[in-house]
Amino acid sequence: MKLTNYVNGKWQDAAGAEFAPVLNPANGEELAQVQLATAEDVGAAVKAAKAAQKKWAKVPAPKRADYLYEIGRLMKERKEHLAQVLTKEMGKVIEEGRGEVQEGIDMAYYMAGEGRRLFGETTPSELADKFAMSVRSPIGVVGLITPWNFPVAIATWKSFPAIVAGNAFLWKPATETPMMAYEMAKIFDEVGLPEGVANIVFGSGSEVGTAMIEHPDIRVISFTGSTETGRKVAEACGRNLKKVSLEMGGKNAVIVMEDADLDLAVEGILWSAYGTAGQRCTACSRVIVHKDVKEDLQKRLLEKIGTLTIGDGLDESVKVGPVINKKALEKIHSYIEIGQQEGATLLTGGTILSEAPYDKGNYYAPTVFSEVAPDMRIAQEEIFGPVVSMIEVGSFEEAIEVNNSVIYGLSSSIYTQDVNRVFKAQRDLDTGIVYINAGTTGAEIHLPFGGTKGTGNGHRDSGVAALDVFTEWKSIYVDYSGKLQRAQIDNDN
Ligand code: UN1
Image (cartoon, rainbow, N blue to C red; front, side):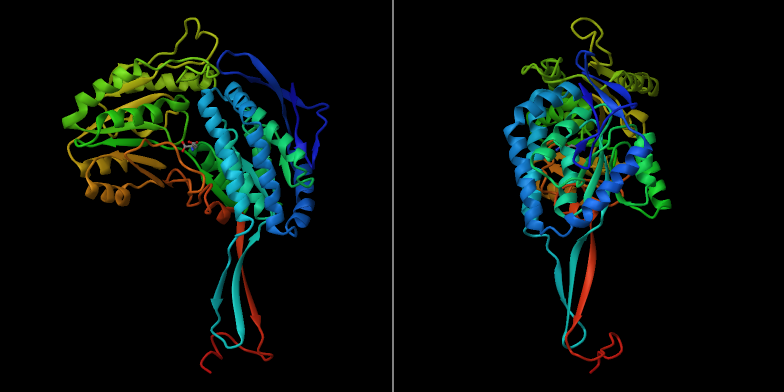
């Protein structure tokens, strides 16, 4: 199977293009070949998108939304197929694959609803017989750069608000997971989205991503990926005075206080740390635990880890799938040595699973480090794998401080029964998402998604906040006095 670009409502002829293999991380099997586009392809796609957007912006928003209802309906109809494709190319276990597709369906319906809202504001004018209002106006052609860990959900968080607001988009999916983008292109095509509104260009960040960022007619870049790449994207966008929305790394913690329901906390940690094999930007990679319950929590956690089945995510009984590729496997593994050199104790895991049946895939054993100090690299850097660092604290205040002592600020969680602590925690945890008595993952699409500090740059994906990325405020004054009225000067009369 050859995956080619979808531009201007057509599958682009791949003649002469280079291709790269798409591998199933569970067994190394080649699933498809993906086209690696060039800056030239980006130029052609932007041209088509620009022409399409002019017409699309004039389609009434509720009519634009009708396409989203159709997209949602088709995604729902194909949910199982989409989940299977997702699991094959990305590796997450099938129930999470279904969950991710559901996230996309929810986003379609939610943003379709925005077609009948897209609220603006009316504001009194300081002058008589003058009407003032502000409306959300589409921006133009927007560029979406998405990661491999959520190949469909994150794309829907960006593309659906973009189109309901009247923009056309150019989407560059990760080269590791282009098959979901291909499936989505088929859906965009089938619902009859006008040509050029949705465009997908496959290729590398250095070629296609750079061309998008540098293209003067792409007016917004919405990027999800690593902090390292995001910083470069932001620099280039800054130079080009381009609006940029960044969602980057996390070093999310679950705090377990001495009054917590420990069994509940263990379940939350297990799900947030080892679900998606730890490859979520919201994954729990630190457990900040009160000293009085540390031993008990560790014991219960290790017991539960022992029951996790690891393997191909298509097998319904598997709880932890493979990681995306060999490079990721090596990066995760490098942190084991780093942690041990820093003086942390490896309680379990720390190994690449290389014996049959794991030898053909990229499997890493669920790992726990104990005796971790908050400033160790394993407690500070994003590992993006199934590795948890246990940090002991003596008080609630110290727990909050340790939580906030990383450069990231995406998600945090606290387990406690004390209502006063709950309210203090939601105020003081410096992250864009806070969970009380639940793990660090599981964000719902109708709430803003994003983080503080090194995780983002003040924007949010999904929720109504996503519209802020893909619209500009336009202020409109209608003077119906029939005479010259000067604001700030004539307003005493
Ligand atoms: C991500 O971690 O990259 O909150 C996205 C969650 C999911 C989305 C995560 N709904 O875990």
